[in-house]
Length: 233
Ligand code: C5P
Image (cartoon, rainbow, N blue to C red; front, side, top):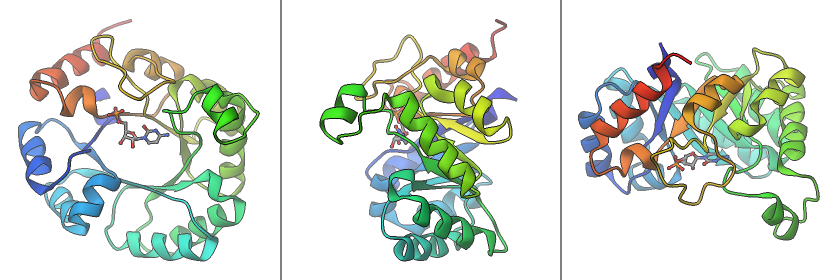
């Protein structure tokens, strides 16, 4: 069922805004909690979502020294979420520390590496971060490193999915933000595709936030999105 492959990013400031959206969108089965909401509300919001039977992607993009990443993952495991993220830019040792922490736990979420933020384009990668590789090459490098460290998959732009699946295997999960239906604005996202294109490229999950959550009518936007991903090619 394609709706279960759409993860909606609950990027709102507080409990009230979050619970309002969750009640308004009962058809959404998979929610992503990121830095904004987690910093504001902590684990209570994760418990609220789990108690409602939702799947939860806790996207805190850990980027720190290996010991701190290991500790953060161990703390996050207590929330029993379904997906967790660590930043590939933290390096191989941090990825391994994260993976070992997950591997030794009784409740094991899928662990994903952030490859390249979908808001960064080639010129920003080169000029701000001094990374000379084009985004697809850098994302592929990070995906291969994550695979070697035993992670379950990556967060990548839909534009990079096909090559990553070819290189890392079809079971290596690809979770894609940077998804924009034709009727939505880009915001700060740069390396984007439509939901339908992203699924055709082989994305396992789509992450979509503002086109739904900041829509004038979120239930209508959700219905439009579902119609778009389920219509025959
Ligand atoms: O509102 P929008 O659809 O742009 O939301 C995308 C979500 O995916 C945000 O929560 C953002 O933090 C997250 N994300 C991203 N790019 C990545 C990893 C995560 O946009 N590489």
